[in-house]
Image 1: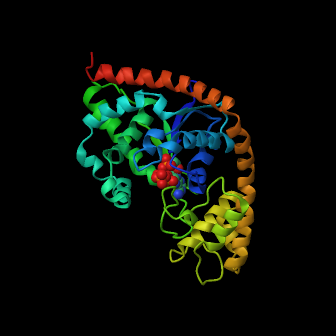
Image 2: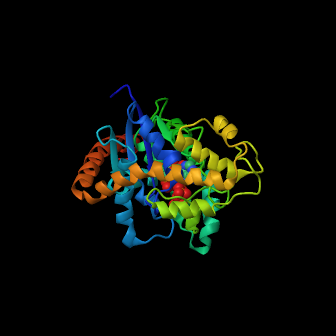
Image 3: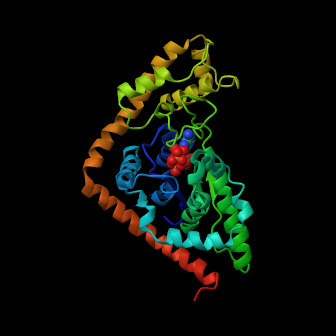
Length: 334
Ligand code: AQP
């Protein structure tokens, strides 16, 4: 175990997980789990940074954990846990809040985008989100953090906090925190909305038709793909910047079908949207079916799920508390 590099990642339980969460994050964890020591959390404290339904939070948290497993995460190889059950996350977050310059935070693109969506209801928590994320990562001495393109800037912030604000200022030449690296997959790192090929597929998009959820049934998937934005051109292309929707759907199809994009571009050179969408519908339904079947079994077995989450929490807590103690002692706490 010792020589394996350590991974930390997570998804917010902010609603139904979608193809972007799967292809941009969870699918990569599945590929990485056997060669790495893997900690995966359900980041429920992040989920409350936007307006949320308190009646749904616990259910969505459990459902997200069940989806990790249904997508192929092996609980014997990974520690799966719920962020809010480990107080070290919020404690380190506070400490990092106090040593992170405000102007670093003011550059965060996700805050700018989400605060526009939220109007007058923007919380301080949303502004602080990247610091809590830094605490999540740094607590586990993570070597690697697999994320989608959208989280790259937040990871860079975590690196800067560890390097410049903790290690350089308090380390006396010795590193206190490990500086993590991002793993961003070439394909799938940014899955776009079905309605707008220039906008990220997102749980918080008010338009349900903009995303395919992992638990959508065959009828819903069919309707969503049929209504997905297309254009008037024949042929499905990847590299034409004027056709972002074509690029996005072809990329999704290529990942699900395990075929090279270049080969598919040739195969679909003269294919119309109607034919391509039919193939796309079949492929998405087929790819999601095994996940949905496993999910149904898992979500009904509360005892097993709780057992997995308890074991994950115990493993995670040991590592997190040790790091927090190290940070506090270097930063001068009694
Ligand atoms: N569209 C996407 N394409 C590729 N990867 C994506 N991820 C999210 N959307 C896409 C990756 O999924 C992981 C978990 O994301 P998250 O739910 O914690 O936060 P998010 O990035 O803010 O995801 P959403 O769906 O947009 O949620 P809301 O709408 O609640 O904010 C991350 O690794 C992310 O990169």
